Image 1 (cartoon, rainbow, N blue to C red):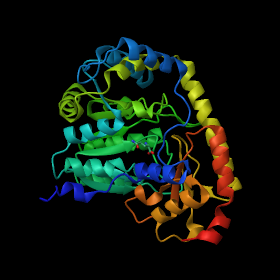
Image 2: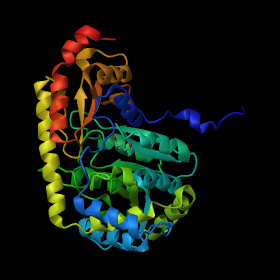
Image 3: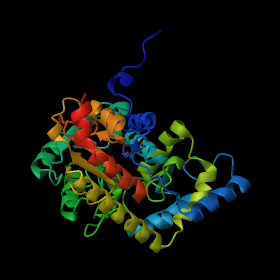
Length: 390
Ligand code: GLN
């Protein structure tokens, strides 16, 4: 066989998504890949049933069906606090995964540098390789997962084309403060860099923290490409509906890349999702109440199992410290955990540039009873380790 491309040799398949298959193999509770085991809002299911009958079933406009973009523009304007134009500023993509990939391809020339905070959501590593960009990693330091402004400045001094900012952050659960965002913004302005954000957890931010959109800071809309999706907010990760909000010139570049990557997101699902975008304010409050309770249920379960962690301020992940097991291989540990304890998590090493083997990421986007059962299983962790440690 002729040789395959060099770029595919530079990254592995997603460990997060592989862990879902490992969980399925062992019948483990899947707290690895972050997706809910509960239904989307009933209004949304009814809308999907209607579109199954009435359509549309053919291609939508490649950068998004006009009514879906109009609904997005209204919702985004409401939350970002300034007007967003459905035609000029929005590109609908297949999930925020494509939003990020298309943004990177639209912004980066091969060899350009891109700042990535570490730990980071594993897609960004592959996105950088596929777009030919070279990551400059800047550490988010535990326990609060903050960055050192001097280290960030040194990274900007290397003249990166962009910085990727996941806020609220996966996997740390950090919600960046206005001060931190202003530090990033002022460096992006000073060194003329884009900020590419991943804000899919914008509505899952626990009291007393709150989400601030990078694009809403003074002077930043013009250089911010905000990637987002409906997956987490409306519990529809399988619908693959994402979008980019960007100034017109950047949005046009993303549109072109997106057109040739995927042509477009599923037309009937865009139509059905108009209903989601029209949900009232109360929906977002109750979503947050639901996740606030889930966080409490799961953190209590971790406490009961004697596991330590950094309390997430947002999103639905928690990094759990498993130093006591003195792991040489956290991937093998997570496979073992799925098989012998019946709970699947993601090895921390998937998220860190620095060598890290003492963390496991669990997510808590599951029914309370699923989380309680996971908690019961984790109570047996020490004993199982005593009996079956690899
Ligand atoms: N964001 C989810 C996670 O971190 C997974 C998303 C995906 O697999 N596309 O687990």
